[in-house]
Length: 151
Length: 100
Image (cartoon, rainbow over all chains, first blue to last red; front, top):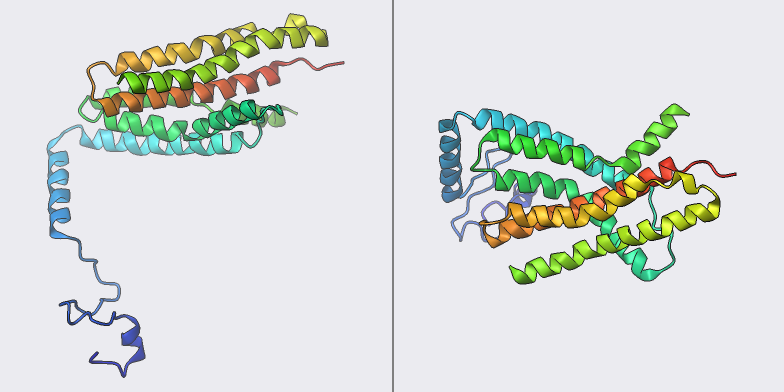
């Protein structure tokens, strides 16, 4: 190493960087991305810019992303308040399985709509997202909150 | 696809099984408690109808799509089935009249 005398610099280097043609890391500098990645990213961006619906779709994705995040959080809180009330192991296992699926239902629905309506009209995705938001309301939590609010 | 559909049929069947046992057991339980008039029939019936309905819908929506897409649709339907089942359970306990 050429600058072993400087402990600060040494902390930012891996031994053998120079031999492999590496350069000293830059503090706060832009990270180098593989050229292929950058190119494909640019191609995607260009394709999106060409599509007049891309802005609406991005906005819808962001809005429903927040909605579904709330749904997932709601279910995570909701399953803390439910229990099978059964000592039967099989019942308990299938109950836990159901709780797990309820927690991930928001992620699955959001992701599935995002992936499966990619080539369709933006409105179609919005419709499916809206339907899912209605179906997946975490009632166990909502009912508890309502009961506490009214008492 | 047959294998995937069968595996999912089994998992949907699990939800259907507990819905049916709720439909059969809850009215008796309510009768024993003396609140037979308050059996939440719409919720119980919905619980029995929803699993096969969503299974059929997932299969229908997946027609002509690649295998992975069909599996995704079935998984979403299954998760929604269980979310709705838990909602139903909480709704039943919220609707249950005070005892005594």
